Image 1 (cartoon, rainbow, N blue to C red):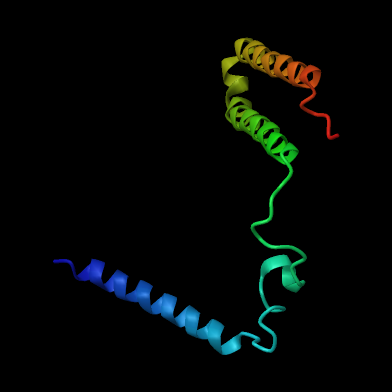
Image 2 (cartoon, one colour; image 1 turned 45 degrees about the vertical axis):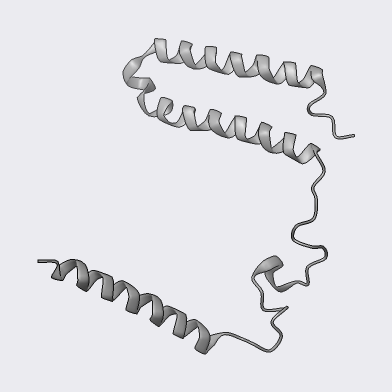
Length: 114
């Protein structure tokens, strides 16, 4: 009854073990520090858990806000021809609200780096 599920599970486990064995057989182990994927093999200059300056958190929030904007614009671009002018007006209202938010953040100094 569950033979198909068991077969898929066995194939998945064997595939993973095979890829791991292939990696172990072909991996370069001369100097583990230089074979790490971090920094493309370069020696790390600082600890991985070092602190970031607080301004980078604000930059990441602004990036995420505009990234979400793009998330709304892609589906809009697909249906704008079907919906017509009302879709264009709605998108310009949306962009206007974002512009108001950017102007407010600019006035508050959110984009100042020093």
